[in-house]
Image 1 (cartoon, rainbow, N blue to C red):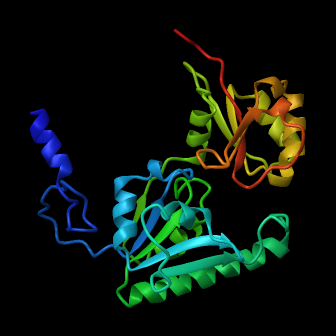
Image 2 (image 1 turned 45 degrees about the vertical axis):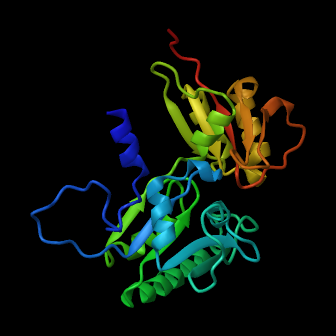
Image 3 (image 1 turned 120 degrees about the vertical axis):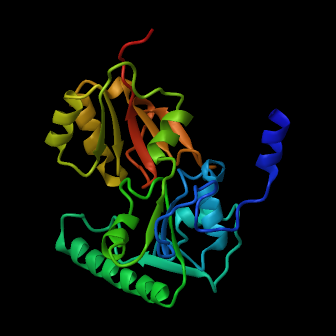
Length: 273
């Protein structure tokens, strides 16, 4: 039995893409061919990419990635492990603004909304021409992902599949060797962009926490953790699973610099058997 299973595993992937392997025969009318894929690539280490994500990346007509202007997007860098740059296949979506403008300002919201409208129109033209489009996503596409703004605009019009990915926070607590919830612990995921009083209130009211979107918000997050009495439990993780990974107790971090790919973990202390 083991030898038979091994032989099946070594068989080449199905060429019936984009249908799933081992998909049962359906008596329902054939569905429209999937044109839009939101592909979760995980936290950065390409070893955490799923087989489904790999198959789609290799076969899609167009590969799309978000990035800061003048830089390659992290998801596209992750995909370097399986595909070489190919200008004929790739579409780069460069944000008009990023962290230099507060998200609550019109100087951020208006240009970003226009950017998503224009990006959706660009990808719609590709799909109307019959081409498949794979949007490469950091972590999981439906977890604080930029892809969701395209999905909202395009999925009602085009057959869509979302491929889940390992979240950045899962990569962070694994590399930090920090089990995040025990027993009946309640986990709260917080964006560091929240007001300080709101951060403090929610930290006081939870057993375990993940605080994302640090950047310039790290000093505020420190103060909220201190007010909630959680600084000594807090772990700072930067670029989890990537070559430049940093893991340290927050109390040992001597500066307030934090890149986009960073977060603070507060592991729970619940029931242990």
